[in-house]
Amino acid sequence: METDHSIANRSVPAAVVQLGRGLPPLLAVGIVLVATVQPLAALVAAAGICFLALYLYRRAWLLGMIFVFLIFQNLVHHRLLSINESLATVVKHADDPLIVFFALALVAEAFLPAMRLSKLPSWQPFALVLLVCLLSAASNRLTGKEVAIGIYVLLKNFVWFFLAASLRLDHRGYRNVMRFLMVVLGCILAFGAFQFFTGDLTYRLLDLRKDYRFGILRLRSIFIHPVYLAESMALLAVVTMSAYVHFRRTSYLVLSIGALIAVALTMLVKTILSLGFVLGFLLMRRRPLLLVPYVVAAVTAMVVFAEYGTENVQRQFSVYIESPQNVRREGYRICSEIMRDSPILGVGPGMFGGYAATLLESPIPEHYNFLNYDGLQYDTIDAHWPHLIAEIGLLGLLACGWFLWSAGRASWRFATRQDLSPYARILGMAAAVFLLIAVIEAFAASNIEDTLTGFMIFSMLGLTQGNFHSADADGAGR
Image 1 (tube, rainbow, N blue to C red):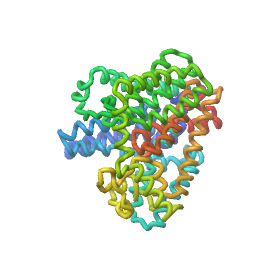
Image 2 (cartoon, helix red, strand yellow):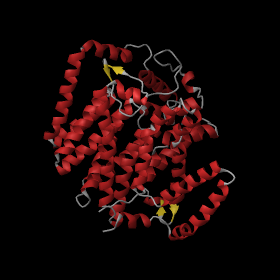
Image 3 (tube, rainbow, N blue to C red):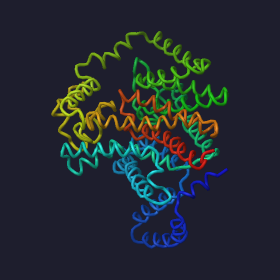
Image 4 (cartoon, rainbow, N blue to C red):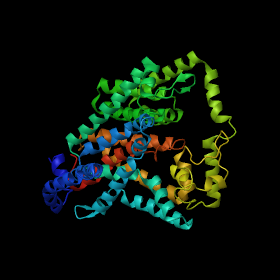
């Protein structure tokens, strides 16, 4: 059986390996010389070289390092704002150079003999998505800057998919990935439990803003926004439930129940409904005994509502339903108007709904009188699908849907293969189920284009889809 090390070494051309052996001494001398004149430049150069080495000889733990960084990125940025605003800005946007670096490296690798374009999974639907973006930009006569920023914001998370797909894992590699996810996400859950019982203590410790919904203090663990806790606990829930289906260990069931309760305590209705719908449907069909977590969650919800009363619930929902300008409702209205005017290719990438629209000062929101519920001009929309349709039209929606269908189908087929490691099948099932949850939630969330949640979605798919194709070819991953 091939090891993770031997499989990964095949992806690096022999000439690159030979060159890499002679470069470190020369680079070390050069960095020392530069450090005597420009210490900061030497530090940046050393960090860049180390990161390049990590990429060339990459393992699954490279994804783990990125995941941990993205988990703490917003919290570190928040704490640095009052200390050093410039450094805080660097931390906030540190994921952008990472994504650009990986994108360029993967493009270069795609044309090397060891990693031809045909070996990259789902590259055809991705190429179609990119082509539609370019056609939409051309039809709307966008400038080069608008095209670059708009396409980057819309498609940046696809890089995580191809990066994860470039890894080749054996039984031990899949086991380590699953254990890593359980440890990291389990620690987040444990801190969330500590936060639940200590109340204001952790909020003061992390300098977090207290947020109430339905009269209850929303759980957020180490995250600035509760949505990230909800998404990460949803991933933990699907991984641990998949593990329980395979191994029947009570510890996995207990961990999944804890993750579901944490999702409920974020009071994030869109995540709760998406997670409950998908998991409930799957588990009721195939594993009736796993309905226990749902019974616990339902009882907890009823107790909470009984204790705090229905008035708080009605008051909370009135903020969204009865306000004259609800942001999501307005987003769908504007999307329908854009479809009426430009149904095939939309208004162009970066022109409506995402961070790029704010950055580029797009005239589209003002043109369609897109206002937030507080009456202020609004540039972004908290829903992925109307954002996608408005920017690259129905053709873009079909292309993106093809990509996600292809990736999700491959992950599900990967989960059903009996000749693969059980850990590989667990991750394949979790990836497919988590994708379905994300697709449903994306009707009321920008999760697919968000960096952290997008990383969780696309890297899970890439770890399984990429190995699905390689397993057919050379037995990798067995």
